[in-house]
Each structure stands twice: as structure tokens, then as C-alpha cells.
Length: 362
View (cartoon, helix red, strand yellow):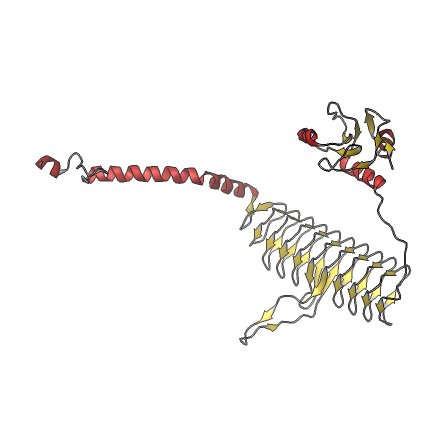
């Protein structure tokens, strides 16, 4: 399927500059684009990247016109390019299938209207599944789980007993919600599993990435606030309370009984110790190691995590360390030489120094 460039401009309500009759066969990023593809360049400062692309046309911001290119100028480059990609590669959509006879559903489960349950899914006793929910193949919903309307759970996810999922939430494949927390009583000389009587509760519009684990609370819930988005392979321990609209990036780990305010951002591989609080609007840079509470709105980096300005000063000092070491060795050498001169010790050649009594006797 090919589409004229002018038609693509109309699709995204953009301004065409160039040959509107150009046939476009697909959409791709700059590095992957082939002749006949349309690509995009969001930041004019990256114009150098155009030297290595084979794209035939570009989607660019209004006011930007790279010389020699056919372009479509738009207000929101990413959003418009997504519409173009969807035009050439429409998402696969399957019709509603209802409840598969190959699913295993307890007779005490309650299913509301327009629920899809795919083959191999297991739905335990007293589970409630809201209207319009989709449960993909091999999902396990253990006893007492409650899913609100329009929840989607992708293949292989496991929800332990009494997990609560808010409306329109999405749980990706391989995620595990409600597993036992990593808490033990070792007073008897053996590691005895502590109480695991709580559950996991997700608010509305939460997304949980593939392979992410969220442990149940000890007595009450481990809770994830409305609108929070959790990336793949994130670990959230027992009794943690995550605020609303957080962004938790891949491989971050949050230890037991810690909490966050609203709109917190954790970049990749952030580690948060137990019993600390991350204030609303705080940002934690990649691989930050959080040992203490973080005030609201602050940006922290490093191990241990410290405020952005303090961390930048530390990094600047670290960069200078090799030169400082070289200067220190030179100063120490000069100091040793001066010390020898003062006490009359031989120099490096073994010759006595001026003022040495042995020199006068000779």
C-alpha cells in the first residue's frame, strides 16, 4: 500500500512543503528508513542525523525546513508520526470472544457483561471480573481477586488471593501481584516466614509492566495509586505505598514499607531502602541509591542519592582526581627534596648537600 505525501499531510493536519505526489510506502525511524519511507526529526539540533538516513520525506516541527527535503510540518511530531505508523501498520484487533470453554472458571466466580477469558486462564473462587475486562491466555486469578471494568491482563500474569485492580488498568505478561513479601523472623535461629495476611491494590488507570512483581502487604495492602505507570521488571516490596501518577522505570526496586507522593519519577535501576518516603514531584536519576527521605520536588542522583547540584560538584571533583593526584605526587617529591636539603641528607646521586658536615671535612 502506498499513499501520496499530500494525503499523509492531510491525515495529520500538517503543512506540506515539497512534492505532494511523492508515493510513500511506509514509516520508520531515521536509522531504519528505506527509500519510499517517511520518517521524523523532532529536534532541529539533530539535523546531522539526516546525513545517514534513506528516508524520502520527514515529519518535522512547524518552522523547521531542512534544505532539500520534502517535509510535513506539524505541532506535535511524535503524536503525528504515531498516526502515520498506524496508517501503514494498523494494530491487530480481534473480536470479543467471550468465555473460552478451555478456560478454568470457578462456579463461584462472578463475571459481568462483555468479559473475554482466553484459553488456559484460571479463575478462582469468589473472583469478580468487571464489565469489558479481557483476561488473556494462561492468566491465573487466585481466589477473591476483584477486577473493575475494562481491565486487561496479558498472558501469563499471576494475581494472588484478594488482589484488587482498578478500572482500565493494564497488567502485562509475566507480572506477579500479591506474592509473599520477603519478611522473616529469625529470633529462633531459623528464618520463619512472617505474617502474609495482606494483599495488593491497584488504583484506576495503572499499568504494570512485563515481569514486574508487587508483593502483598503484611496485614493490609501494598497500594499503587491512580494513574501510576510501572515499567518492566520493577520490584515493589510488601507494605509499599505508591502515590498517584508515578513513573517507575525498569529494574527499579523499592524495599518494604517505603512510600512515595504523587508524580514521583524513578529512572532505571533506582534502589530505595525500606521505610523511607519520596516526596511528591521528586525525580530520582538512573541507579540512584536512596538511603533517606527525599523532600518534595527535588532531583537526586548517585549512590547514596544526593541533590542534583551536590552530585554535580562531586562528579566535577572526581573528573579532576587524576590531575590532582599527579600534582600531589609532584608536590610530595618537592617536599622530600626540600626536607633532604634541610637535614643535609644525600641527594638522589648520593652526593652530600651544601651544609652537610661531611662535605666540609672533605
